[in-house]
Image 1 (cartoon, helix red, strand yellow):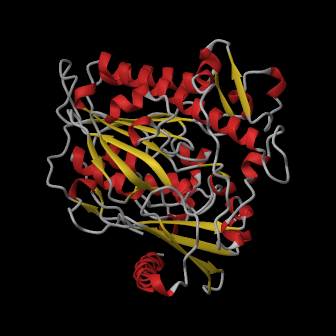
Image 2: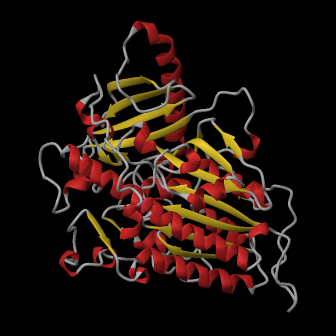
Image 3: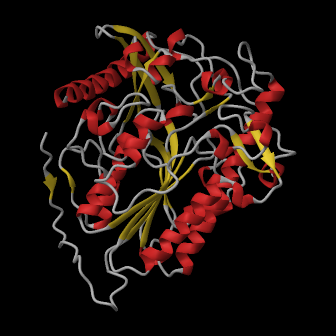
Length: 474
């Protein structure tokens, strides 16, 4: 498939420069992605979070309080975000798919910047999977620290088994041992090198925590020692059974029961450990931004900060991601334009596929004409916007697409979440409708209630419109 590029009317970048031309007028981009981080951040209104550096960034940025990923799983969500296309368009709906095997001509976000004359580099986890991470069309130089094992995440010898061990581990040892600290330090080295160059740069930095196992310096866990973090573990009334999972990702750890309920006490400790890892990442982000300022790059750099998807921390009796619900689909998104000083909050539902066209417009970089996302700088006041996500079942289909029996599609507007589940023959198997006018999470499935028939019909038509478009694209 040949992809056409839309012309934004911006003059092409000058690729050559003299010895004294070190800071082009074109904006740089620092693109930060965090694995498994939901909006448990102070600037998103969380009352428990110790996140001073992300909060400070938020004071000079646009905060998208209702941003949604396209599929709450690392492989699909990152493929969508980094191509501006939905999972059914990329062909990536589980963990093990190499996106270029599905679509060799697909254009990635860093690739578009590279083709526009940017120096594009990456440290840590940005794409999911080795082949995607090493994508030679995306990067100007070989990626760093993108590959790791569980032994790289654990500090204690008893947990270095080469596989899942304890779900939580906090130590007082040298912090330089932690992989995220190494990622931060390598990113600072890259920034220093990029600052001496004559090209604008796109630097992508991917932090691992708060992804399981919850491992961080103990000082971050101490921040939450006296905080009450009881989880609302009640299951949704009327939800179809296959919409759920058994928190399988968490249950693979040796200190978590393999069957049955996770105790209230363990739920609370796990939640504190999750917050501690967010605070650890906040600390690393703070040092990265401080380095950007010290190098004199801050004023001319667009900063994007996103969690790759949301996360259940006991809500609805669930842990981890992999659902079509608010806790898993909603994720933090902060975008600071170069030179921006004022905080702006956007409560309109937006999607991660919107990031690609938004950055293109901000930086004067042409983007593919077939993107499914929209430029967030052009949101119209008073217009209703929607966010669409999807997820397969059963849980094993996250690793092997051939095991899939159902695909669920969900649409979120300013108030409602609606879900339709289809079997492999295209038959509608179940529907869900939730009123989220007061925020929070889904509690009661009111699909089929005649009182809300008009709402369900409207959202169903919108979903089918997306489905028909997606099928035509493929």
